[in-house]
Length: 83
Image 1 (cartoon, one colour):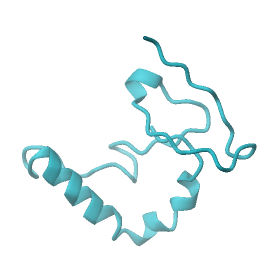
Image 2 (tube, rainbow, N blue to C red):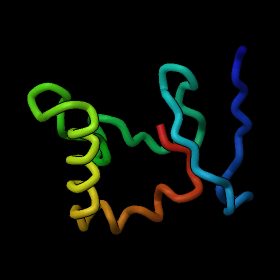
Image 3 (cartoon, rainbow, N blue to C red):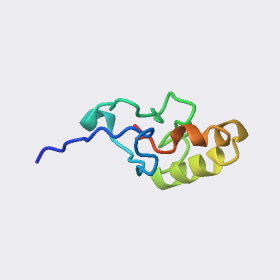
Image 4 (cartoon, rainbow, N blue to C red):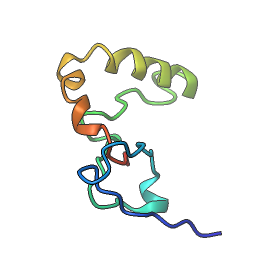
């Protein structure tokens, strides 16, 4: 089954729900924001050295909400697909 991505512009559809997409499956649609490892939003914690998958996800969540610089940039993510 193939998936189709419909391009929705946040400017024309401000209530567009944000989707989190796998760039290896969907590519990076126009207007999407990259939030993966290597971006300022990426998880700096690594499975293994920093814990199990659930542990590093929890560490990232605790870390990101305490990054005031990132929290001021949340509006840039709203209404855009995340990759």
